[in-house]
Amino acid sequence: MKKDNLYNLTPDNLTAAMKIAGEHAYRARQISEWLYQKDVSDVGLMSNLPAALREKLLAGWSTDLPKAEEVKTGADGTEKWVLRLATNDRKTGKPHRIECVLMPSVDRYTLCVSSQVGCSLDCTFCATATMGFRRNLDPSEILGQVIHARKLLAEKRSRLSNIVFMGMGEPLLNFDNLCTALTNLTAKEAFGMSPTRITVSTSGVVTGLKELAERFQVGIAISLNAPTGALREEIMPKVACKYDLDSLLKAAKIVGQTRRKPVTFEYVLLAGVTDRTDQAKDLVKLLSGIRSKVNLIPFNPFQGSKFRRPEPQNVLKFQKVLWDASIPAYIRWSHGLDVSAACGQLAARG
Ligand code: SF4
Image 1 (cartoon, helix red, strand yellow):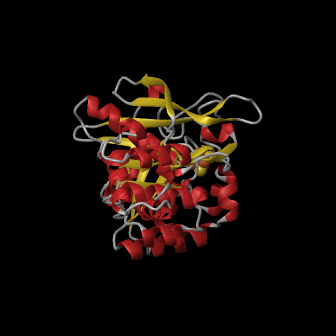
Image 2: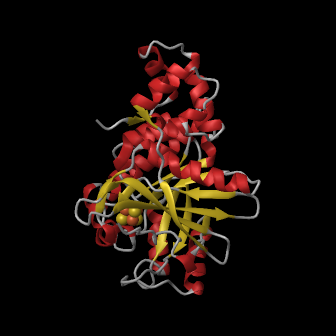
């Protein structure tokens, strides 16, 4: 029988598991310290646990994490990691693989994590979509990416400051595991990160958005990518047909009210498709009545894609229309373009 993974348990679940095993509740706290504060996953090394408990843990639980397989380092210092999971793909027989990206900037390191192997949503400008959907990641596989980055940074005497759920997959289509991962990232007994240092990005899945905003004070970014429903359905066919623009904007308003701060929208600029100034004006109209902030992401090309990156002057013109309408708009030139680590370029083959 497959053993469940200790990293899949929230602190409350771990305490309950200890009680069921006839152990004191404080043992859960000790185990959490090893797993999350000392980054020790080898139960045999958990020296303050009695030998009998270590045996019980080894017999009943796994602490396996994804294994680092390959790294590509970009000229700007961005590291794209390929991690191998313990399962194999049914079609190819090869191990499932995911990618995560560690991005340095002047004062921080940000980790972009994946939430699924592949993605089911077929956004036309995204390399992950070309993989199709393989499976959801469990919390241990999401947290394993964070643990991997923390260990790398500890060697450099640095610390991970921010996490963005913008890697492979749609986080809200893996809602329960996303919530467990967020619980462990923010719980003081586990990673103890401030939720304000975590951002979950959704392609526009409305189901779960309100619950996410209510349960976690994490940043939420909504990928809008087009100023009209029709164009959105063309470039993001699956998600935009299921959740129309009206319902998405209504949900975005609720997120804004819950947060009492501007809603963050992501907008991918595709040359000749979504980057015209008349479209920027339509976007202004669309967002009227919502306190918004817009991140403009010039398209990052990948092999086989039919889209092109816009000219820098068109990006600036688009941005100006938004600023002239008092909508803060920031251009996000992606990190790691030269090693296919940029936004929309992740596609680990397996
Ligand atoms: S953009 Fe996000 S939601 Fe769309 S296919 Fe890529 S990973 Fe999936």
